[in-house]
Image (cartoon, rainbow, N blue to C red):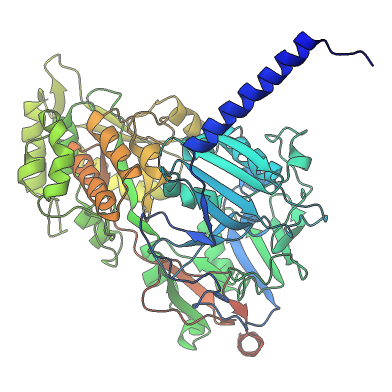
Length: 611
């Protein structure tokens, strides 16, 4: 071995000393983290369940195990890779944290044994449970967490994960069982995404192309194991009896079915027939016509087929919003957008299309504490004031006027207001056609891949035609639809309107100018909206968080970028009465379905014999 020269030795020692000095400064700058068993998105929030809680109160910790649950799946079924989110995938992979269903924002360690949040709320550290294992017996480590976050953040599968994880600025492995995630804003606001994201095995995927479809189940770790796949037909999951986390407090009373099977159906009509025939156990009904008319069958009269609901207070807003592409003329003109809003008779749709069982969404955060109402309060005005010159004056002086109609016939008042607004924007009716000063007709095309959208859009198209606007619905296949969204090649589309409660990752993805058009459907580039989104994401107290969201709501409403339609409400389900369901408290946010249900042999035998 060669001797190291004195000069080299001094140089090496100096480098080491400098490194230690620099590290000391980093450690000094970053205060030690306080690790806890749970965490909340809301600053200063006190968790409902104590550190030694045995199980969530609303679950039946003694629920029997056994039986089969058969559920429908209407989307393509070409791969079982967790990257593409096949049906039921979240039950076969572990997650860092688990949300409690009976409180507004409580998350408890699942794969994570404890969670540490920095004082500036820009860093979060997860300490993993040493007993955590993949089904093949290999330990789950920080490497798996880092790989999962970075893979989904890259969004190579183009499923929207990039927007959902855009706040991540880095992921570091601190030791084999500890991983740190850094953020550009309050990382605690993003707990929904961190709890929803599956942790996938790095040892399996890191040398594979994650974009490639797979039909052979990869290694899994969760309470269920994917055991059978028939491409395009079904997937079957089997409960793992020796699941490593079966006795954790967040899991007791859950995962009670021995088998969960997802059957693939081409459309909802066939799936409903399968339910009535007893081939499916549970169906989520989103069409009010069928909810009102399609289940008046003998089995329902006898109490075997049940119409029920699932609490869905973890989501706010509308089932759908009509989004205008503001990167195109004339939809960049607020007068045009307001006119189009007045031409849309939501009350008629609720009465005629939904049988009056739905209500109008009067806010982007409808049915939550984050929804605006009346005039802005002092805290909201303080947030809005720097943008006064850019905002409609009525933001400060008037409650937002949701058009009100009796829902019967043509809304002539709304159409009259729309016509006046269009005149102010330079559009007139000539020979029955709405044209601008250059004689160019006003044309709007609604892009869709879903036949269900036509029921909502066709009445609106008819109202626009009364104004002389040339409106059309362009139906294309799903792949072409996604491509046109990415290229901003559309005038208007219907988008899903649900927003998490409390609002988190979706604020920046849906409304911020930095968001890609794929999620930011209206192509918003509004400094006031950007500032309010950042204020919400960086609020240090609940009051400030609520005020920022309410102020944001006002700006979105008064700018007429998108029109909320009917409110979400609770989820409506139709099911065969052969299951046990836990008794839920009055204040519930997330229903434990199907993970908290169980197979009731006595009920199932009665239904089977009588059907």
